Image (cartoon, rainbow, N blue to C red; front, top):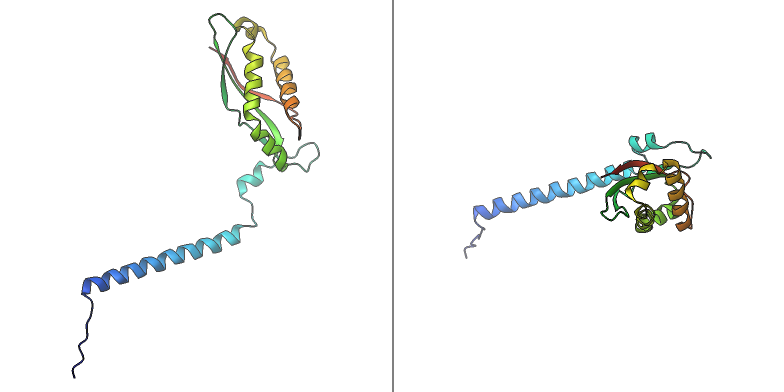
Length: 161
């Protein structure tokens, strides 16, 4: 009895080999990435190491919280003008709970700022002392916070339109 050898077409063999080659490449990339990630796991990026600055105690890692963004606030005038303000403040990045509280209070910070500055007319804002504005916003922000306090507040942008 003759034995008949049935082989798939030549095109199927080529497709099979291409797919196996792609699979081997994908597995090699995944393994290489895993090894690279495990090696780099314990090291800190150079940019992060340069960003660390000493604070009063010398053990805190400070960062700048600028999550409030740029706010546009209407003045209390009959024909309101627009006040554009952007605020930031330093905080301890290693204090995870305080960082989370800051992130969760962004809308409260914005509403406090809008409430305080929106009560002034354009003329009152023009003569308002920056130090007084800064101190009042700082005290209002700290009244909202429970897990820490903001020590300094920086006005990055302040413009009346």
